[in-house]
Image (cartoon, rainbow, N blue to C red; front, side, top):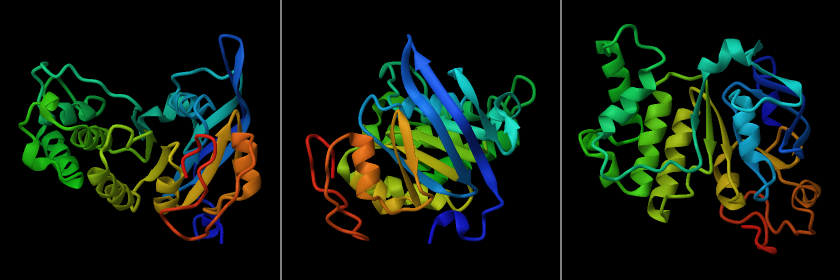
Length: 262
């Protein structure tokens, strides 16, 4: 049964209508229509260059569309941007820069704090965010001393410290080694009990194991408000024939094909 029908059909948190975006005269997104419901965990897959990051950045108001609209909680972006937090695809740090994990996470409160100093509430929320991602014991560590997986958790903590309604993640496990990946997705599932998550990834098997619904994007969006991937969706997105080899098996959904991760 489509997730959208599971008692939340009236609770739309994102509505994208007839959205098209071009960059340097090249069409990147073509007539995108997407509705995301409260506490969905939507995975968006597709080939490199298919527009996944552009879609997220447009939802954040960082890219102006050629035409179309984005509504967050029924309001235009200029009124609702504060409801969204974003973890970008590549976050690089100068490993010698003297900033601690704690200071990075407190930065998530910048848009909410009053005055020049952080309040007791800001400190409480930042500590809670670190605890959610199991990084509180390293709060005094310099950010440059962390592993890729640890840094990614800190960036998620910074994002959720802003108390968003929606969390956007762009290839969140790209810099995470395998021993951190499963734990990272467990954290996402726990956060999803409270907030809506949209996760962009090229890793079909990982996404399919954890998300509630899946969309395929390659300039155009193919989405059925369901977790099931159909051969038609994948062939439209990747422009090549593929074979679904299993349903409901978390570690394998598609056969590897010309660079497509299965």
